[in-house]
Length: 630
Image 1 (cartoon, helix red, strand yellow):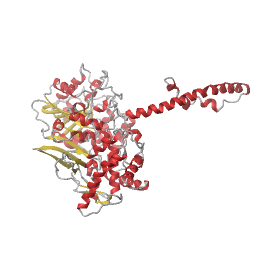
Image 2 (cartoon, rainbow, N blue to C red):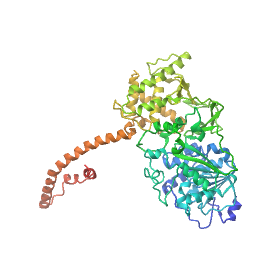
Image 3 (spheres, one colour):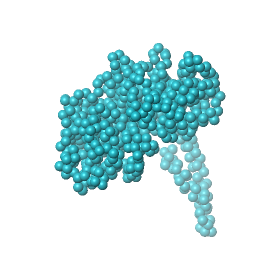
Image 4 (cartoon, helix red, strand yellow):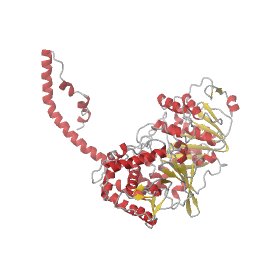
């Protein structure tokens, strides 16, 4: 490969370890100089550069660092790992998150990046991988007579308008990518869906930052452009690809938690919607106030066969007639748990075997022992359990708290059968658990026995799934209930207004305990919070941001459904309007006083009084833009 680069005029810079043509200036694409310098500094000082590096994950403190450093970025290609063992051309290497994974899988990788600064970051991220060659060049000008086993366009195709000078830049980019493939080679694309459901719910278009921009097709010729499913399929066929597979990553391709195949959406007994709605809260680009509840919407979409058309993004594999299908129809989905210390990271594959669905789990860090035992938890992987068809019990709770006028009593009514189930299981082992006392002890293996991991089957029975964690000590019944409530609050993106007028998570927890007949102090809740924080820290390797003291006392008001938020805003606006009318009445005598003060000021040279400036301060004038609309 390097001989080929020399042949086409590329030179190797020994100082940067990057190939480029003389006098190449780079493309202007950037996340910002400060951001990229910070990413470079973190990578330069990291001792572990691997995809699942605990060192790098510790620095994932905001969206840019998560996007460029998180091991979850590689999840989009994990199902394709066996197809990525040959020679790979990565178009648009960015800051090297995907490059790193490719380098760990493939025989050889050419990482093509148009930005000079980003090329140095890619090289830094792969500095210990001799099979990765970093080339700094614009894809439109890139030359190489080598034919690859796979070419990737991960988050790149949408930028064709900016860097491909052609009548149809997207088609031209696809044709050019195809020209670098060998006969059995495959093009791998990850891209946002122009008609993704989150955009209908009010999310900003990812590149332009304006809601409804993509679904209204308001793209200009010089802007990044996304496409819907059928449009992409037609573009690929026009580019000469005869074989196209489309999969749906959730919440999107950037940090996917689940990836579902076309077979997964139609397989009898497989609840693809359950995988989807449980990822909604993990979408970092979701709207703050969605126009509807995504958790309630996805099951209807899946049921009506629209899931692939409305997925937030796509994973596409395209090839020619010589290509064999990448995935057999028996593979339904994958689920990843990678926001953890690497020894705890796992991948689950859902496979149809005859009339049964098997869940094949494996650790992503092979060096980990089985089980992995920590201070507070032990982690173990069950050997290919059967998939249990039914409803995730948590979903019944979700339906309650997203309905206007819900009551705490309704939540507890659903929690009671689950609590009885736990007590009965403990009783079968000879353990006497008093359900009237939150301080009764449950065995440590019930740590994961929360509604999120309970399936309610059609015969009305509970079945526990996904029990990978076991506490090393016994657990209070009250703490398990606290975990169940915390899970509910973290999963639900929008709450409806409740009858009791509860607006804080803290009060919600206390109200649940009171309704269950338990007398629990805030000090006890704080103890549960502290334990959960320590457990999360052990799993993630750092202080959890999703559940800490601040989060437990956070306001549910920010999670109100917009239809109710608007109602609340309307009431507040009416009160504000009344205050404005009062201010208007007060303004007349104040202005008279102001004229009087001016007269005194001119006569006696007294500096302007504070009250005169007060009514022209920022706070006072804040109402003026609204006043004209009152």
